[in-house]
Length: 74
Image 1 (cartoon, rainbow, N blue to C red):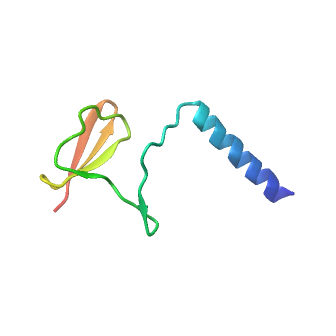
Image 2 (cartoon, rainbow, N blue to C red):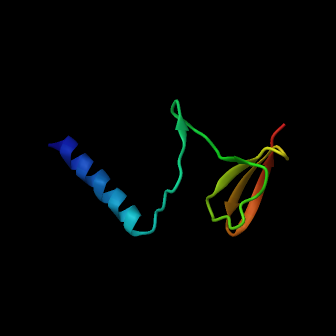
């Protein structure tokens, strides 16, 4: 019975997130690994939480608080 309660609680939590605007469009997993999209240019309209890897500059980019943060990988 406790396991069922846990499942229902988890489902209700997921529904709350969906109702509050959680939006997952693309999520790629390969062998259990999250794969960041690769590109040679920044997205035209990035949104907070978006992550991408610029192959031309070797930078991991993350949109946060309306600005884009870069991490250079060597």
